[in-house]
Image 1 (tube, helix red, strand yellow):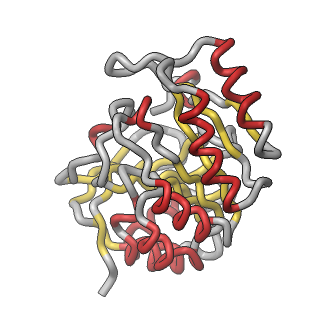
Image 2 (cartoon, rainbow, N blue to C red; image 1 turned 90 degrees about the vertical axis):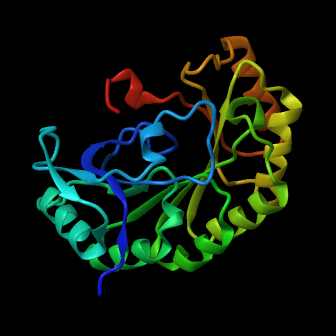
Length: 247
């Protein structure tokens, strides 16, 4: 019997964050999250919907409604239809927090016909990552800074998570706000350094939401300069999909 998960939506779009910004992906947005970040831009993903939305054709933004939960075999069939011409870079498993559904991830990845699996995750569930890592190609890991997310980082958990993630292609993203200090960012940098100085770090200025403001230009440049004293690859990349009007 196929593993099932609560799915918010499946659609074709452009990756708007991180080092693969701009590539075309099929997004599988899974419902549920173990966090409640103050800057969350997909709060509707926290609760499982009665129906998932599946795009009829890649990029047309016409959807059909499918009852939840959705089986991995059904999700893979929808992915196959959207990627029939094989022009997508990868399949983005996002959320919410997709690692709440590890068995679904494993089965869906196996059924996706050799397509690359790109996991977007808040980096707090190392045990679940270990369960799926051999079926994942790219890990986009957040380190949730308290100044932007409203909760403290757990360094030991984040370190364990990144050590596992680095078995594949991996990068780290830290969303920063006007309240983010250099010391706070450097504590996250230390987590990355322990896993490897060559792991890319993306500093992402928060998109203004719920009263959380992004840093100014000088603040961003200083945060990047400080991180580059310890890491080889530090980039400042905003949410590009927001600039183009994509969810």
